[in-house]
Each structure stands twice: as C-alpha cells, then as structure tokens.
Length: 206
Image (cartoon, rainbow, N blue to C red; front, side, top):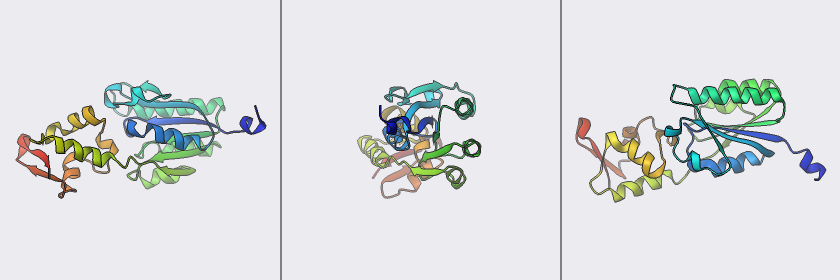
C-alpha cells in the first residue's frame, strides 16, 4: 500500500432515504468518493417509504421505523457516534431538506469536513452549513413521469398519483421541488391536464 493510500481521508456517507431518491445512489457514491475513501455507506428511512434503496449496491439500509422524523434522528445519532470514534475525516450528508443543518454545523465545529449532497430544492441554510455543497440532480425524473402518463390513456386519479409513481418508478415528492402533486402538474400545463373535482380529479398527459 502506498503512502498516498494511507493518507487518504476516510469518508462516511449518510443518506436521508426519505428525502433523496434511490435513483441518485450511484451519483451520491461517486460524489462522496471524490473526497476520500468511502468506509461507511448508509441510508436511513422506513423500509416501506424508501423504494429502491434496499437494492442499492454497497449501501446499508438502516430501517428507522415509521415514527415522525425517525430517519433524521437515527442518522444524527449514528453520525455523532461515528464522530466520537474519530475514525473519520469527512462526513457526506445526503439530503435535500434542512433537517440536518445543525448536525452539519456540529460536525464542522468538531473539526470534521462536511460534504453536503442534494438537489436544487435544498435550503440555503443547509448548504451554507456544509464545508462544500454538491448538487446531485436526477435530470430524467420529469421525463420518466411524463412517459408514465403518456402510457396511461385514461389518466390517473390525483389521489392515486403518489402511490402509482412510487410503485412504478420509485419516484416520490421528495424528488421534486413542488410540495404537492397538484402543484407539480399545474406548473407544467403544456404537458399535463387536470380535470374533474374532489376525489374524481384526474391527471392526463397532453
């Protein structure tokens, strides 16, 4: 083993699976790996709420149960434990919300380099709390959603969109900037049409 290998920073990649799509697994590994040797690769979330992550190669799925914010809490606890072991130099935190802002700040205050990995929708506060921010986007998500609706000639009831897209494509609202599926479709009138009212509201592609 060369001296260069010995001196490489040791990296822990911790992923908020309820906020980052499994479609980004490969990009996260590549991005985190640029900052040293990836020793730990873990994703956190309720197994039923994070489709696709159980099949992500080389990443350990840590089931957090169904409690509110349980994935965030478990990720934070693990990060603190790993930091206390002093076996790591870099923490790569993958999330697109602001729940890990304080964790990133705490790690930096204790001498660790923090690489933030996420999408455009990530809050500015979280981005700034990291030593480095890396945008990791899944550019083909919208194309896959549109293709899905192109094949659904009769459209999809808006109340079933979340379930159908999750099961068919592994896509959830956490992959998008919008806070609801209705807002997502309304923002793309050239591609989607919304018709009906109440529980009979449906979405079709144009």
